[in-house]
Image (cartoon, rainbow, N blue to C red; front, side):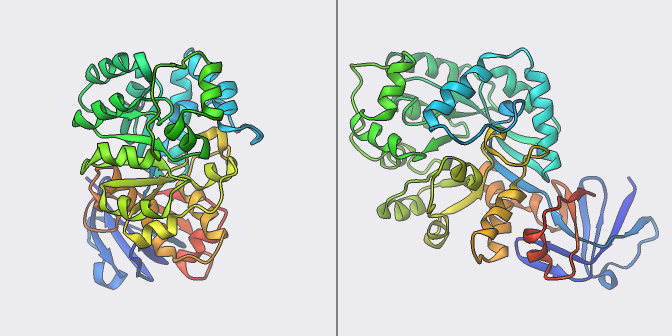
Length: 383
């Protein structure tokens, strides 16, 4: 297999600038050498290319809905329940173009500099299409079941291909029996958690806007009891030491920081989705300080402002624009934290020797390479 040698202005990963100028020797899927041009030299069997760019590894999208990629962005003037009812339900009920939608979503993720993905699939057909795509994807099949519908959801779980994970959708759409069965299954687990204040009221008391929503769509069960606690408390109690991904966590109380740190939870924070729905003051920095693994997701195309891509890089740039943050920390959230949360070898998204999930080149702006990546509005290209 031919080897490629790239001489770049800089090479960086979550640890910062590894060399400037830098060199990467690689073949199609393996990094063979990393360092300065002088350290790597010019092997006789390598094709040398000089680029005015900064080289990074691929980014990781820990939480996305590829099967919602076909519609485009929707104006952010609806509550979550209205949005689900008016936008998501019709899309999920129309499976006529699912192959086209998945193909588009995969292409948009690649355009966004991502090759490792945690996808939430709303159907088996969508799961199979993503699983067969060029992405290295952990596919979580969405489970829905409250009250008397829990048995059917659990039967669906047990009938899945072994390699698929499951996503008990949320505390308002899945009963505790479904969550327990998921965590007992030995599969990889994801869920939406503490996304809205309505969710917390519903878990504690089964009242409020979420109750009204369930009654309106015909799945309310009068005999089901409230959980009587914050949903984070309920799910962590069931999870124990089992690894899982919790998407959003917009509403976290002080005591949960230590509880989450002691758990095996990876938070999939979706900054632009949180902003889209009007959630503010996310505690991601406090989570990191407490020792919680925080990764980055994009949620769905429906709430993004970049119609030509689905990109974790845009999420990191969004966070960077909100304040002064350590760029290495942001890159870590968008690469190795997500890889670990999804169960991948984190070295896939570093510039270490060995197999790589892909290499990207960002145009250099002449300043600090990490800051240039986060301040630019241009996307990288794949090497």
